[in-house]
Each structure stands twice: as structure tokens, then as C-alpha cells.
Amino acid sequence: MTGLVESLNISGSPYVNALISVLLFTLVAKAADYLVEKVLRRFTRSTKSALDDRIIDAVHRPVYFSIILVGLAIAIKYLKPGSGLLFYTDNAVYSLMAVIWTIAAIKITNAVLEHSVEKVSDVTGLGKDILPLVENVSKIVLVLLSLMVVLSIWRVNITPLLASAGIAGVAVAIAAKDTLSNFFGGLSIFMDKPYKVGDFIVLDNGDGGEVVSIGLRSTRIRTLDNILITIPNSVIASSRIVNESAPIPDLRFRIAVSVAYGSDIDTVEKILLEVASSNEKVLSEPAPIARFKSFGDSGLNYELLCWAKEPLSRWLAIHELNRAVYKAFAKEGITIPFPQRDINIRDLSSLPARERQARHSARHKASGEELF
Image (cartoon, rainbow, N blue to C red; front, side, top):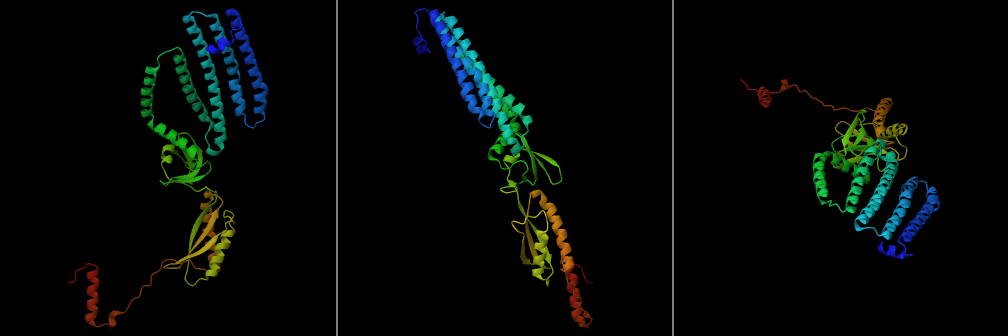
């Protein structure tokens, strides 16, 4: 600033130089104001986002007043007041500039936060009611930083304040350990995006359902029983998540079917495919598949593989397909087997007496009975 003062030292009178400084910087402020209004404003109006307009609104007046304050500070130096008075006037100007830009920073931060929440609310379900909390936290941080700057301008030793703030921060962090853990877990979910609102997820502890909302502290899912479960984000961040709606919302499911030996397997496969193709909840592409899995103890084991349009519809689709397969098999005379055991009873009266006695003794010994 000293070089700038010397370059503007046009007249021998300090009062004239001070007046020239104020007038010159006022003209520069007006030119900057014109540039913002006529050039930058026209450019921001051509964009689709309203964020840049709000940023221009936030910095417009601070730039104007900051330039004038710089001219005022230079004008004061021309007047050559005492060192004590100069210290107070300079620090007052710089402190006022710090306050002006703190207000601008708060406005810009609020605009960015609102824009970010609106952008991700449809995907994550982050409610706009979280905005006041985030805005208040950011406002407190900015005000504290501004206070530190002002104290530094006035040459106040802020080291004890920083030490006290550090101790208080550690105490708060210990007391709010779970809250902070959930908060950072929510941030990791927003950055990694393992799921979004509307996805069907299953955690490694067995909890599963449709994601209803994603907050900074917890995630809410609705189970198949229409029960709302709130899960802390710290739990989700450390869990294995199965997203059944990604990378595509379609989900393949399997239906196990068994038919009796001797059944016409061509008819069985035809019925399974026709039943699957006629169900509205089953996708036609990829097409359903009927597979002969194995020879079972009581029948031939088949598996019907289908793709559901969405994970939540698979349970109703399984119900409908099981009913349709049962009715179709009954209509075609195809038997669904169940475990059976054949018992052969032999007549021992024709055996010699000694052999009958030996078999009788062996049977009682196997059952743990004592013979007399």
C-alpha cells in the first residue's frame, strides 16, 4: 500500500491528495459495479443455474465498498495522523472489510448449500429440513474465523483462545462420538453413493427394504412388512451392502419345482415357460429360463429363472407363479412328488424256530431291551 500511496502523491497538499484518493477509488468502485451489473450479470442470466446469480448478488456490494474503504485508508495516510490514531483508523477499516466479506461468505455458503441439497434431494432423499442445521453450523464457523481475523488485525494474542478452543473441541468430540460417527458415515454415503432413494438394499445383518430417505445421521428403509427402520449411518458405513436395484433395477429370482419320475419333461418345461411369460411382473427380456437341475430322491428337480421388473415385486410374482404352476400341472396330470418310503413286511412263521429266536434277540438288543 505504501507504493500505491506514493504513486498517488500528485499534489503537495495532503488534503488534496486525500480527496483525489477518495474520488479515484470511488470511480474505480463505480466501474467495478458497472462491470458486475452489465457484463457478469448478463453472463449469469444466460446459464440455467441460479447459483451464479446468487453468488454475484453476494459479492456485488462487498466489492464496491471494499474498493471505497481502500481509498479511504489511503486518504487517511495522506493526512499523516499520529501513530496511535493511524493504528486505530487502519484497523477499523480492515475490521469493517472483514465483517463485510464475512457476511458475503455466509450468503455464498448458504446459496451453495441450498443448491447442493436441491440437487441431491431427489436422489438421496435428503430432506430440506436439514438445511437450517447445516447453515447454522457453517455460519458459526465463518463467524469464528472472522473473529480470529479481527483479533489478529488488532494484534490480540489468539494463541490462548486457540488452545482453549482445541480443548473444548476435543471434549465435544468425545461427548458426541456417536453423532460424529454417524455424520461422517453419512458423508461417506453421499460421496460413494452405494444406493439411492427407491433402491432395495440388504445389509449383512439381514435387515433389508426399500430406501426411503438418506440423512446426515441415519438412513431409513421400509421393509416388506411396511415397517420403517432407521439405521445409523455409522452402521451402514461399516456393513456389507447388497443393492438389489443396481446396476439395473431388474432382479432375477428362482422358483424350485419338482415333478414325479415318468413325467413328460418337454411338457413340464413348456408349462413353466408359458406360466412365466404370461405373468405381468416377469420381464419378457431377458426371457424366462427353465432348467433341469438334478435327479432327486422323489422326483425330477427343475428351476424356473425369471427377471422381475423391480425387487419389491418378486415376492408377489413368486406367489402368483407358484399358484399358476400348481394349477397347470394339475390340469395336465403332472404329479408334484413328495417324500415316500416303501415298507416290506415279511412272514417269519416259515423260518426255523432257532432263526426266528435269533432275529428276535437281535431286534431287542438293537432297541436296548433286556431279554429274560
